[in-house]
Image (tube, rainbow, N blue to C red; front, side):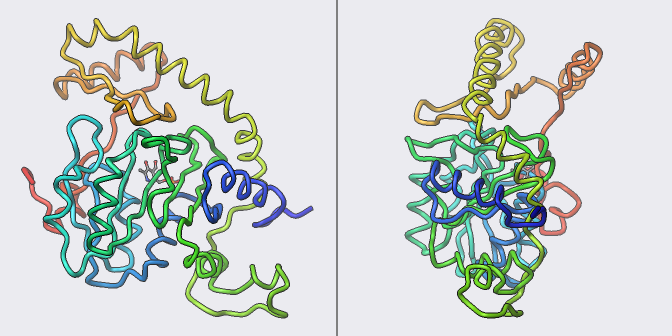
Length: 315
Ligand SMILES: Cc1ncc(COP(=O)(O)O)c(C=O)c1O
């Protein structure tokens, strides 16, 4: 039985996702963080390059580029969806900008028409960190299919999971061959297995980014029943949204905003409380009733590392 990487179930996951999403190539990875690192390697990120990123995101969106020497250029988010504010991007573009990172917060799409337009006019690739957004759509098109590259997470916290896992989505066929090499420790092993070369060898930089087929089997079983999983999440999300309206209005609590042209995958139900004290009290109140809730991202430009890149309060 084949239980290392790229066995039967990995291939099943690849072809299912490629077919459903309409993506040139899907490669399962050991995490979304690792898929983001692969994106940085594929874009040849080098010291001194700049990457436009939202400050309100998970550390990996940024770190995957910083480890190759990039300088993160933090951009503010929109107050409604908490996604990258498309009106703030252009003024941060310089001759060193090598990528624009979009994070579809809670699986609700960023303003991709505007962002793709800005990126195209400057010839800068867009990379979608779609950790939250598998099967979400923006104006009818799947998230993860807009950027040259996109990444998914199959971490325990996500809608579909294998504990730890992810995927790289490749929408530009020019990246496919090198992506396979980078994922296979810098060797052309994938070509060898397809019979395209008679022995495999070290041809480029790379690492071990392919997950065990056991994880892929665990994931595939969920992808097979994706409609049931999504329908249940939708039911729960809509129940909260409907029944919390009056409570939220009375207490000044902000409920999620989902633009009508965004179909969300019901990854998260978030609320914004008026004060930090109320937020803490809410988390404790729920915890006492054995309901787990957490606070979410702290702006990265104000983190210890973010401040080293010049992030300041009020930016
Ligand atoms: C936006 C975003 N990007 C990347 C990641 C990292 O995902 P992983 O744990 O699969 O590396 C997360 C994790 O939750 C995330 O929220």
